Image 1 (cartoon, rainbow, N blue to C red):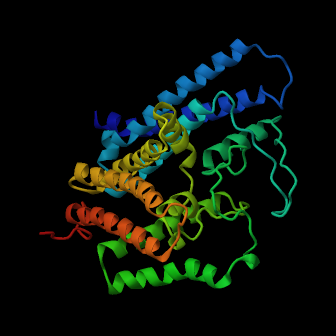
Image 2: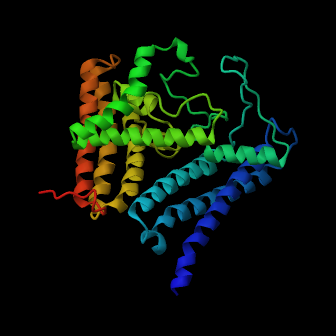
Image 3: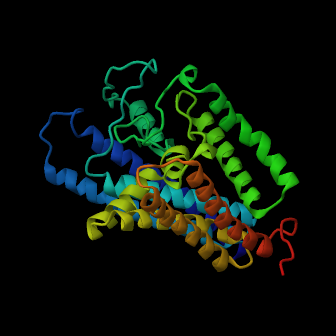
Length: 358
């Protein structure tokens, strides 16, 4: 009995991986049947059947992926590994729902890569003739967070695109890129507060994701992050300075449906931040002895970020980025994150991190 339970999780993970690959290849096949790759008058009913198959397989795969971290053999593993698995499962489940549900009618077109960053010529559709072309298409859909190789590339408003470093303010660039890795660890050592620890955590997340992106996409000219500690407002932080890896599915699964139903942009913004909060709250829960408390606090924190974006827009309007606003939003963010960090320290499953909170 124990042996059968022990092999259940690996088999489930394997089946989920196979179904995920099937969805990507079916999307690739459907894309190859549409312009500009073919001019044949395909039977529309055939395409509709293929679309329904992709949608059904997408839902089944996404549900299975979200349930994977709750398998008995996985819940008995290290809490940090459980959290890491939840982060990945939620991200790729939502990514799959984004591709297999909202973009299945017209799958994204992979575009040819520019040889030079200063090349102003329009990129053309990449070939879709061989099995290698199909595999590259599927691999890029799987690994790219911002879909830079496709016609659905996420545009981050206000972020410079492929600007040579020579045109940037060198002092500012050096301050906000080299400064945080040097100053934040020293600050946490000298002033170990909940707020400074959260700032250091942001730096760790930035370094980790930037490193993974560099390994997977060495030829990508754009970094994942754009000097996040230089953000002068919450809106700038989340839309410009932080990574936009989840923007595509947050738009298609939360923002746009809410906007379509309610007609309210503030409600749509809160819906997107709520989905982000559920993701992060569910992910951090395993490392706490009070998972519901920590999970709800983290979810509320991200909803609070959404509220903060709306409030700062109401207070400062178009005059964003002043010193007062910069101090206010960073204090608001780090204090709120510090509350969650304190809850984590008080109820952490790791003895070396847990503190006696009275």
